[in-house]
Amino acid sequence: MKIALLSIAFVLGLAGISAKSQSPASSDLPEKPGVYAVDSGSQSSGPMRLHASEVRYNRYTGNNIARNSFYMNSKSTLDLAGNSAELSLKSGKVSFLVPADPESPELALSRLTLVRLQPEQDRRILAALKTNAFGGSPGRKVDVIPIAKETLHGGDWVRVTPTADLLPGEYAIAYFPQDPRMFPDSAFDFRLQ
Image (cartoon, rainbow, N blue to C red; front, side, top):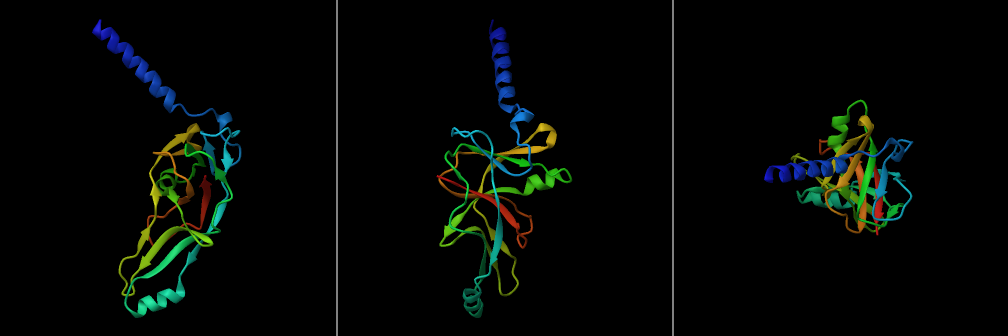
């Protein structure tokens, strides 16, 4: 009797797991390539396309001249223009659909990053970069949000899901190179109310 109950529980558990890991039908996926947000906590009518924003390299020239004259680390940041993103999402229960790179899917997946932006006056900081006047190793500080990545529809799409609900604020999805001296040229930004 115990064995029968255990086998029923095992089968039900497998059914629950397979229901969770089923990928969406291809009709649920966007037709055009791009990065899309799926806000499961709101009544929206499907995926919403995120727009790419140009990443600007801010050298803080005046401040860095003063810092270097006192042998301190110079500062620079990667910024997105404006104090808020165009696209606003209502719920923290959000996932993203990103087209997979057919040429090097593993490399692209390893660089795909969800970042919390730091608003500051007329810009939002994507990352802070540090260099040393004496040529020390460069550094990059990024407020990375932990995510899970799942390949969908035969490897054509990747679903990116934060491991916890997002809090209100400014966010972006970007491909960060492994080398801290390099940075993305664009980021897909959004805000959460």
